[in-house]
Amino acid sequence: MCPWALRHGRFHPGRRFGDLAVLNEWGLVASTHGRGMGGLPPIVLLGAASAVAYGFAAVLQHGVTAKQSPDQGMRLGLLASLARHPLWLVGNALDGVGYVLQFLALRRGSLSLVEPLLVLSLVVALPVAARREHRRISRMAIASAGAIAVGLGLFMGVARPGIGHPRATGEAWIVLSLIVAFVCGAAVVLRNRTTSPSRAAVLLAAGSGAAFGYTAALTERTGHLLNMGVLHALTSWEPYALLISGAVALLLTQGAFHAGALRLSLPTLTVAQPLVAIAIGLVCFGEHIDTHGLAPVLEIFGLALVIAGVFALAQTPAIAALEDAVPTRQASHP
Image 1: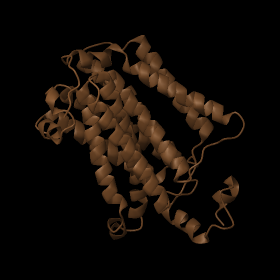
Image 2 (image 1 turned 60 degrees about the horizontal axis):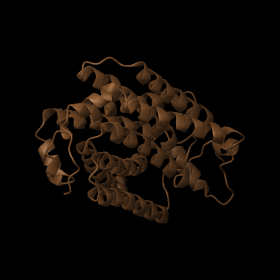
Image 3 (image 1 turned 60 degrees about the vertical axis):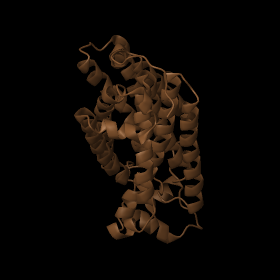
Image 4 (image 1 turned 120 degrees about the vertical axis):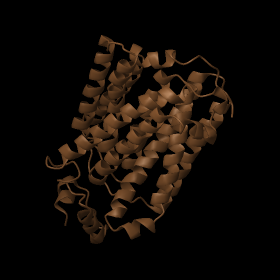
């Protein structure tokens, strides 16, 4: 019997021993899944490094995307137009680096552990944006970044995200996929019915966050499939769903940046992705966080600090300056 399961009460008499054997084979034990000190630092470092890459990428991509013709809207032609800009391509390359680092982190850690770390991407984006606009970082920005760090530390320290089994049932995947598809579709439909750039940016960013959270779940699952062999992974549906969801997330993100209002779209995306990923980890992958005593209250307070810090940080002059450089426009319909 798995010692971890005994310690944390995750063993059930009806569960097949083979399931636990697979967990051991994948290395999903306390020492390598963030529960032991030997496994936690590499996961945190990989997650933080991923956030750094994503932060740089977001600023570079927005700087190009927001200046595209308003009639591009949510068209594939928008991506074709962006592909002609070197800075946008550099941003995508950094996105690729961030994704590889995130992939490596998710192979060892859970969604509940890795995904919250990605909120640090906005903390990274701030000095990058300030540097590009030759602005100083304000005290408000520093305080907001501090709130994010404190909230993230509080959530991680109290929740102690635990091991799961990244192989949800077929029925769970179907329901999850339908929910995410509905959210993304609704974001596009509602965006097409508004003339407010701010509202359009928030809607598309929310859809993008949902798609990226779903992509993170598929990433973790695909990573564990690869542990059983490349051929095994290629004969499974998850890698192909991963490609599709990643493309949808990319299109929605660029649409959100194209709509303008980076002070709204970037924090919405930054917050939505980890929240969706955590929900998937808890509901579908059997991950767990501490729910004893005051733990839930402190966890919610920690997440509230993170969310408040993220939105406050996005209102700072360095981020607002990126929008000031783009002419004001009405949201266009495709």
